[in-house]
Amino acid sequence: MAIDILQISKTALEAQKTNPDVINASIGMFFDETRHIGGMPSVSKALRELPDMSILPYPAVDGGKDFKDHVISWTFGQYEDQIRKEMYVDACATPGGSGAIASTFSVYTKPNDFVFVSNVRWQYDRFADRAKIKLFEHNMFDQGGFDLKSFDEQLGNLCKIQKQVVVIVNDPCHNPTGYTLSLDEFKAVIDILNKYHKNDIVFLYDVAYLEYTSEKDKRIKMLELLRLEEHVLTILAFSGSKTFGVYGLRLGAAIGLTKSKTKIDNFRPRFVNEARGSWSATPTISIELLNHFSKKENHADFLKELKGIKDIVQKRSELFISQANEIGLKTYPFRSGFYVIALTDKPMEVFEKLTEKGIYVVPMENGIRIALCSISLKEIDGLPQKIKTLID
Image 1 (tube, rainbow, N blue to C red):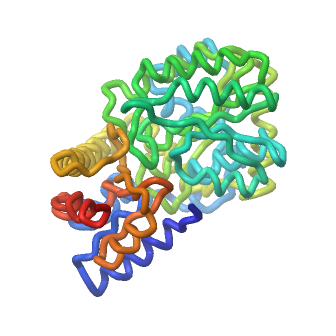
Image 2: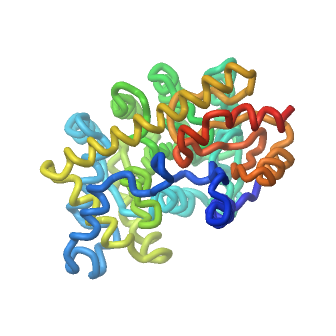
């Protein structure tokens, strides 16, 4: 569906100005319980206090050595040393996680290629349209879990007709369902990627919501990447815009990871060339924000505020899911994150009826996406019943 999510949210925000009862459950931004954005005071403070020389000059196109080292350290956490020891790693700054996705499509596909995606997904379609490529789908869910059989079979079918294949996995906190792969499921995905050694696999691992998972060790899956063989190049799409709640600053990175020196040697110049020829450079203030919070003395306050946001979002999701279960409102499997999908075979009809009642959501292929991150516990209480009434 060619839905403009940002426009839906803008319409909802305008409606709230005249009617405070309007619920804006459309946009993937965190709003606190009083509808205020910016749940991280340390981030707002840092942005105000960065000196001119840290925000006004042009940055290096790839973000510079400090940024690249910091974003790699941030993404891999306590496993960085082990990963650097066993794999070749490099990075390039991008305007948000979206920039990492768009540049991967541009660099590693050619017109009329297919990229491998799940049938329930974020709007990768828009990036594919721009790159003049097509989507090849696998089924995402089977009996409440990830459909590994479909993933394997469909990837095998695509590998028979295309030598180089970009494979997209959005995990944890999958947008739009809120599903997170179990460690065993992720291990199985790695095993499947290793199976197709006659192909060149580009594993686009979209970790935009890495910081918001409810997993006990949210980076343990990074160690599984060490098992990937030389025919696989992993590109992690990091979103600092989501991590720091600075959605409009467009902070991201593409992080290349592989056992092949040739692949990593080709990674940097191709990404830098793509950046220079499209967006030129990521905003300097965004780069310096990540550099700022990569310093130990600045990290503690951020982590405390991040935990506060995660706790609030988790309470919201628990309330929504519990009420949905009580009344029989069906959703895709949910574990944690910003979103949940209520299932319906009439998404546009339900979307329009909800809009008439001042409830703004996002219509998807087989349901409506509710952004739990942007609505309060008060707004969530009773919302599943309102939705079910219209679905039924």
